[in-house]
Length: 430
Image (cartoon, rainbow, N blue to C red; front, side, top):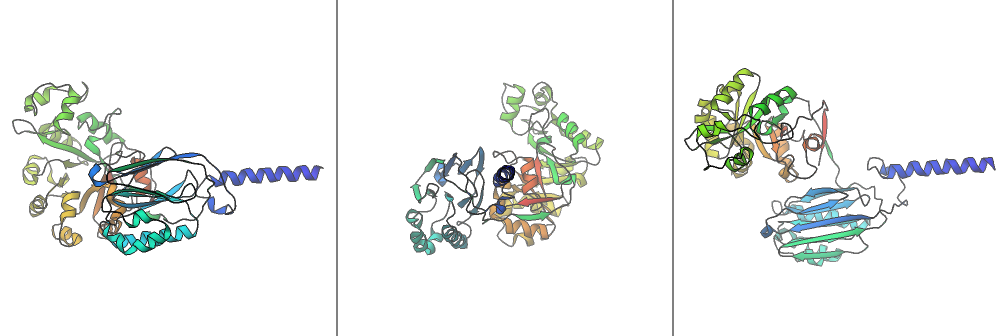
């Protein structure tokens, strides 16, 4: 009887141990494929066409992912754990074949999946139409460019929906799913920690308030570890350069009720939320003179020569510029440039060659385009070009820690609101 009791206890302990492991994607491979776990989860899928002017997204277990242009394939390890990849069929027609081949494999393996379209191209799917029909994706095989589209097999059979504008579907998933197959492996990128990987966005957050562009924000975030500070540079009504994100935001921050833009003297009278001091060029120059190891990164201003002449130290100035003409003008005059996303993507010749010829060693772009531009990121990294990503904290869950853990290494650094960085030396990137 004792032996039977011992055996029962050991069996229960082993069962509980295996059940705990099944909830962690890192260890799921140790669970036999025959074991299943039934969990009720509400999954929200939202596909928006180009004309809806909204980003497509999906939400699972409280985590929302905003997807990029193309067809996004989501694979479920469990009802709560997933992996996904976006195939940009608009930019690269070969992506359609890659997605169709992978989808064929997933069907053969009886995987659970969902598909969302966002501003995708139909022409590249023509060559895959017969294959898609054989798999049961009749509407996908006939989709028009930029239509909204959702498909899934989460309740046992393929369900498709298509619309010219938008589709939103909530699925109460209660199937038993444990699938340890990884279709979208993460790539490990090594990097050395350094405080020049982080740019304090609009001076950095202070007391929970973002985008103040204030002296107090510079002071507080310098103490935390930032050494690169972005300030938004705009002009008052009398042509004086000052630091503010935009005049509507500044008026909201200061309760200013007068005409916009204000004069320079009016700008300097008002404090942000009554506590934080605004900065004109004298204030900016005074602060950077007092902090000789700090670098100013500009935003909004696109006149490199005039601003460089107004700043206290051109060698500690990095100007984000928004036209190729401004980039080339800065290059000819020895001004350090961080080329913005739009002019970078507008380069008609080889982008790496152009940056080299114009001595551009820094790039600023949205982290939202990384998944569809990995090859370009790796080429720039190989050439020592430092890419800094913005749109941090714009999407749910995509904060400084997420970028640090998933994207630094593929890119050099980020525009950050908060200093939350450790000495971690590697990152995983999708």
